Structure formats: C-alpha cells, structure tokens
Length: 132
Image 1: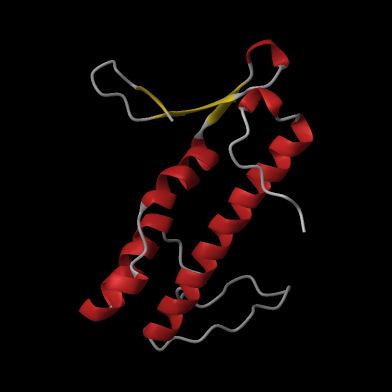
Image 2: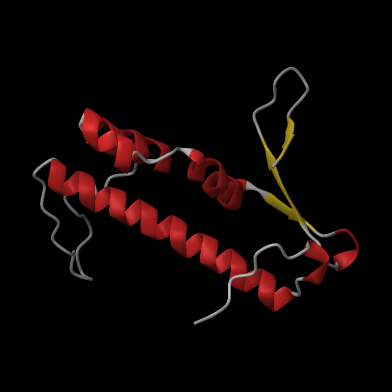
C-alpha cells in the first residue's frame, strides 16, 4: 500500500510524489461524491440503470443529475435525523478543496517545487484574488 506523506515540507516533495498525493485527494473526493449520490438515490426511492454505450440520454436521478458537491452534502445532511447528525453529519469543508482543484491555477515559479494553488473568487470591487 502506498505511503501517504504527512508532515512533509513542500520542498521535499518531487513531481511524482506530488502527483500521487493529489491523486489520493481526487480519489477521496470522487468517493465522497459517489457515496452521497447513492445515499440520496436510495433515500428518494430512485433506481439507477447503467446506460448502454449507444444510449444518447439517461433518466435523471441522483446519479445522473447535474448537482454540485455542496448541494449533495446539504441534501445528505437534510436527510439525517437529529440523532444521526451527531455521528453522520458531513462537513462542507471538502467543497472548497474540490473547487480549488477544479477551478484553481497551479503556479510554479521557476518551474520547481513547491508549487502554489491559487483559487480566484468573483470580482468584488476590484479585489478578485483569493489565495487558497
């Protein structure tokens, strides 16, 4: 099993290690989204039939629906009872990470590590940049 780097300074990570670690993050985010989608599918008595390769369309349900991770987390949390929330509530913290990976800009001054991930928000009166 691959070793996950913890407490490693950015200057110590090479290109391959960086890609591996980002891959772990992406895999976990994808697993979270899939789990939330399947939970909501079942909670709403929907079924999912895997489309055939020749199908042009698929029925809309929680697996196929275009819905953001934040909305999936909210939908999941809304389905929990008060007693379940203490144990099973999902934080919306992963949304910021997911959005940064999807919409951020990776900057590598001098083409070397460490690299910096910048996520820019909407322009707020000329103050548009938010470092993530």
